[in-house]
Length: 275
Ligand SMILES: [Zn+2]
View 1 (cartoon, rainbow, N blue to C red):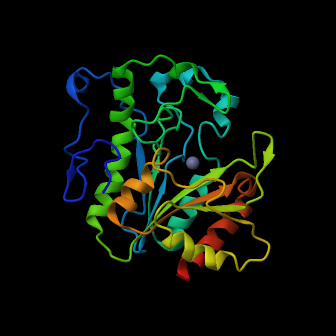
View 2 (cartoon, protein in one colour):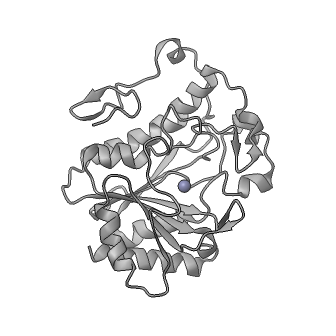
């Protein structure tokens, strides 16, 4: 297994419990979350019986109170730069429909992006889609460590622990995201994208079923593919463990109403049931 994070490799997988931040960063870290704030992640349907774990890295646009909205406006925080609108609703619907466990983030990707390697310059973005993020400029090592400790590690430890406790050889890992209809002035034609890296098993199986829908424009590794320098969740928890996995990307103009969301849940649940 490749070394994606610098985490100690124990029995072929990262040892999340043993890993902590190096050197003096461990001591005297500033707290990020107040006791009355939500935890960094939420587990839905923890005893789900399905052979699937759902994860949602960009489920929320909430920011820890101490980050003071990172200096952004409410309007900016409602945009895609802060989260994946609609993704959490689809993921929750799928968890119920499939009787699957779902682990989702409770904080914005602008505090820290849970799907970026720790060494990525996009882990804590200083700008996104051309919008400067004032509260992410010039962070100290201690500030960065506080975000990793409070938000990044708990989420990924929760996924790792769930997978450790459910060694099902038939397990699948599905990561739910959404994408903007336009990027850099270009329309994106795909209603749904299935993204993968070196392991195309699950994307291929789902894709073969979904392409039977004549009206569905399906992106094969579009608009995104899984890449080592950009992605963290599926390379680590899917590829790193040999678990078939896929990133499901739904275009956001198809997630604007409960009816649209229900339709995606049903479509994806039926496809999942047929593989
Ligand atoms: Zn996303």
